[in-house]
Each structure stands twice: as C-alpha cells, then as structure tokens.
Image (cartoon, rainbow, N blue to C red; front, side, top):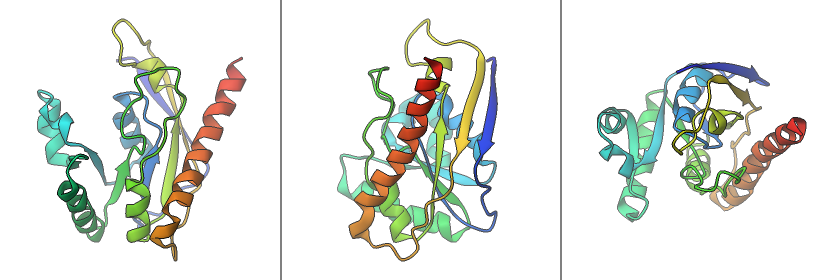
Length: 191
C-alpha cells in the first residue's frame, strides 16, 4: 500500500506485564500501526457493528472483544472477557475516542471511559501511543490519502496501581492531554 512505519519509543514495555494500550483513532490503518508498534500479544476491544463488514468482520470477531455500546450487558461482558485475556498474560487495546471522527479537522475527539475503567479495575498501566500520519495516509474519504511514512510515538506509561474507580475521569483526562499535546506540537511544527 506504500506505507512504512516509523516508531519512536520514549519507553520500552516490559514483556512480563499486561498493559492497556490506547491511541488516537484516525484511520483503519491505526490497527496495523498498533500491531507493529506494540509488537507483542494483545487483544482489541471494538465495536460490534464492525463485525458485519465482509471479510474483515470474519477475522475481527474472532480476534477482538466485541462490545455493543447500546447494551449494558454487552458492556459488562467486556470486563469479564478482558479479565480472562489478562489472566492469560495478554494486554488490551482500546481506541478511547470510540471511532474515527467524521470531521477531519478534529485533532482529537473526547475520550470514553471504558479503557480507563478497565485499567483501574485490573490495575494495569495505561500505555499511550500517538499516531501522527494515518489520517493523511488513509482517510475515510474517496480519492484521499497518499503513500508515505506512518509515524508513531510510544509515550511513557501511566501507572494505575492503587487507583480507585473514582479516579477514572482524572486518568482519562491525563491520558488525553498527553496525546493531544503531542498532536498539537506536531501541527505547530508543520506550519
């Protein structure tokens, strides 16, 4: 497809530790870049609706924890399935924006609570990543995109040890601010 990943790491992840990987969501290529940047076993938590996409959906529903966000039981089941995966030594990945914003001018949409609730409940650190170029490389519009570099930055982890659920909003905001700051700096550098 003409994309080549370029990953810069501010921290290396411990192979014996489970993490909650989170990143900004810009494109369908985010999934591929996340797999490359993390380079270790993990499972995505994703929207159930995507399982109906031909071919992609076949693999998606066999490799992800699916959530129907309109169904409280489905959301509760995610926590049980995540616990099983964590017990098996896997990490979890969630794009906390919940989807790619329709408006391409949005740098970073608001974050949903799920990733941060899971991280606190399971006492696993948040491992934030920043994706800079995926929207430019492979946008959700026809005749858009171009070959080139897909840069990712692996930020330092945010510990959750000892945190309580009442701190979930604080953790969510802290994580979003770290990612947003990197995206805004990058935007300023391009001017």
